[in-house]
Image (tube, rainbow, N blue to C red; front, side, top):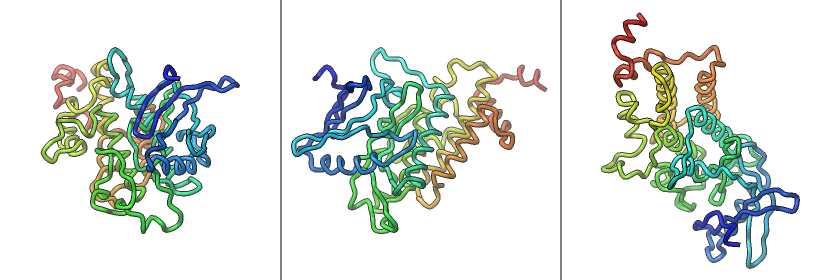
Length: 319
């Protein structure tokens, strides 16, 4: 049994398995000694059994009695987004800009479904790279609904962070720390942090963020003048001179919108429908599809020139 162990967390353990029909599965076995975990099992079942979206994990089955509770989920051999951002040991995982734009946009589609199109409004409440699995084709799947909030009717008005479980440090919306109402805008904040993390490959709890500085403040202060120092250098490593200009332009666009998603006040953040529209425009421009979207080349050029990527000779040649 231990040879099939994939991982251990506060909730319990995850094992890999194979059904009689050959389907590979993950079996999430819960630690029943923890009362919070017992409650999360019921909540996660209630969410996943009725969710139908290509970017939200589907539940295959459940196993439950007084002494044993487990969720049977599809097996994802590719692992989670955390693993791809921060490989351990000799592992080598690389996500190019195309991968990251595709992953973040599809995650946004999944959250939009949960917030606006699901059978009941679902607030995930713990969005982070560790809770995004990647399929063989790098399709992302949002997982772990153990502390999700299901909002029926006007229940959002009475639900506050003081009577709810907490998410993960660095991804929690600031209003929750003040006892503010739980809302979809909390997920928007967490998503914005996740997006920034994908672009710069630094955790929001990185040791460099001290003395009141956090990930989004650091990005906001530096990304226009020091974009090359801010972004994950893996995104620029294989790009030639002209490609770097384009890549930095798209990264600038992504960072600008991510900073809007992480504004301090929840009412200043867009909803997920608006976020998907913005991301699809950026991603579409990357693929060259929408004709009504123009990348601000003047901004990209200014950034690149300040970074010293385009020298005087290349500028004079272009003119």
